[in-house]
Image (cartoon, rainbow, N blue to C red; front, side, top):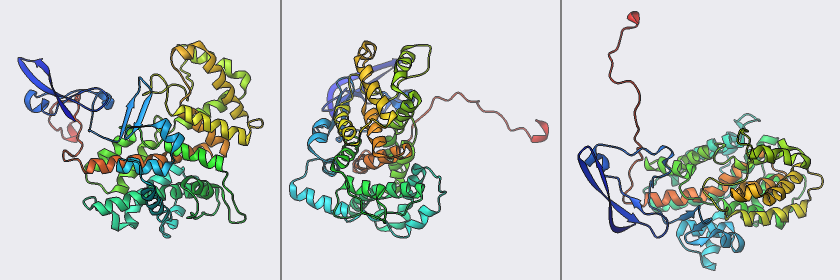
Length: 431
């Protein structure tokens, strides 16, 4: 954060306050309001914190107007096209792309931590059979602090490192076991000879009665889903992790808080909502009806999976995800899947419609990731857990960065109070 030698002047009630302005390496300048209450006796009002920078970070940068997403300066399309998930994990955690030796060591460390403590099986079996996989993940990840006591001290750099590796390594196992439990199949243990994405797919779809061979096209598609969702700056779940971390909570509690926030349909459930919309449309011949509804200002219906709150031009992740979607659909076929037939035709008609082009309502990453996961045979209840697997490294990177920040303070937003002022207690018989 660099001082721009500029200030903003705020005048009110015969007061004049000079607020310093700082510049980052990219993005808008920021006005430092930390002394506003002390010098002016007022707070700022910013519901949703959409105009507030809560921290300074070196991890991820987004320019929504230009459709830019950078991890440590590297464009997301280059990372998704040329790299793979664990290499991106290393980049996010440590700041630079690894050498071949560093990557081999990192992958080995992750691989050696993929198994869960055997007693955690009992925890899974304590949930109802119809429990949502996200409910299981919130509980199991939070409970890791009860099983891994040697990596909960946030003041010990080595314990922070061990916790980071454990979370990245074990999250696919936790998600896959949550899925297996929900469908009544035996848990499948991880295998050290498989890559990260292939291991996850095998734990989801293998059964003890026969061998399961992971298709490399499906593995690559899953790896891209992980890569494209690895981090996304200060979104709701990341901010939740940072807020929990600011209190000194252990890493497993912080990540469990992030998973809980991600569970919200406005955050991690977008691809699930997209699939549910495609199933509501039902058949390709009904698409014009739903496109007309999307254009009708008096109709609350909107096309899920189109446009993005942050990206106002295009979603830089969608191009790579579309490529994977096309590869998966070519492999698995869409002729016998009406949902996928609707998806392909909706994409075609929307991209050709001037209304959507003018409003920049492009298919986003959630549209394509939902198509891929549905084609693989995963239920919509697993879409958000897969998002949680991918985002774990982003949460951890932000958590580690915050703990090393000399300006770290416990989060404490303020409020504009509209409640009752002081009033005296009245005994119950006199009310």
